[in-house]
Length: 109
Image 1 (cartoon, helix red, strand yellow):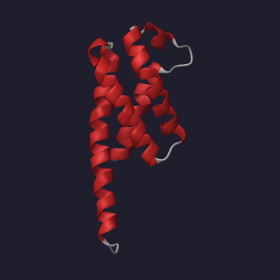
Image 2 (cartoon, rainbow, N blue to C red):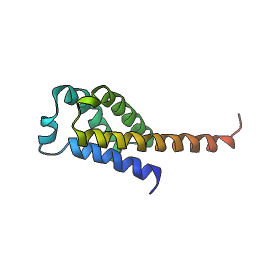
Image 3 (cartoon, rainbow, N blue to C red):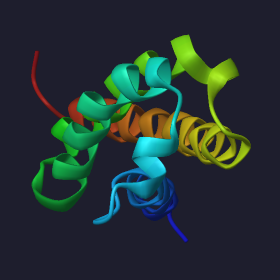
């Protein structure tokens, strides 16, 4: 599985866990967690399904930044899914940046 596939899978896991059709999980979250993550998570879901690689990277970064403020108050399953997303994001972003640098080597200054 590629770094991008792992990253997308981890992002989908978080989105699917929280943003379900019945909102039961979302409504069960502590208010501080829900307030902090719902908007960036919705953006991540949109970018995951219909965004560019840049939009996905930006959305994931924003979500992870917001989630870090409320991580201690998250339920265990959400905290684990966010940790998995953070790890997959680091690998994906690092490889994406490396490939952009390599593509730029052949270009004239």
